[in-house]
Image 1: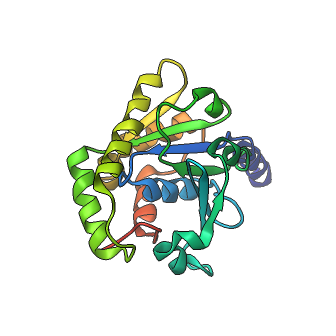
Image 2: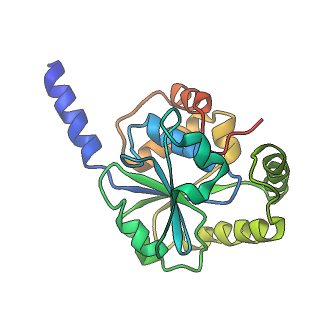
Length: 212
């Protein structure tokens, strides 16, 4: 009956491994965050954690207090902490976090997570950086540093033989590649939702990095 189906669905969702999104900068980090929210994952009670070396930012969800301030001033939501200790804060079923973590970091730190790798051609990352600099309100980015980090994150591909990693591109998400989103749901072992609706809803959501 309906109550039994709901109970089974709830247990499936509550037992899902936490997710970490390893993303190249400007490769759709928060679009993927929105997709995960559509699939019933949570970033936590205070927002979505973005983990980096030595720090993390917790960006409030759109529509909640502090969202617009955090978008232009990440220092307002920043906490200093080693990146691997930050991981422990989201090592809970059905939670997720995002970050641009270099491939040189220890893969075993991610053993308890389902790992998603977001990639995008470096030329497109550069173009997106240019738009970000014009419209984000944060000032100019260090393009050489960002592009170097993008290359380092892309090298996580070499770890696929050591740990399960699901690679998906910015274009797969932005162009609503239903087949690829179906495969993502299979990788996450999530209760199946209509992938086209999931992506359309994710695209319609506001996000920390959505600019004109």
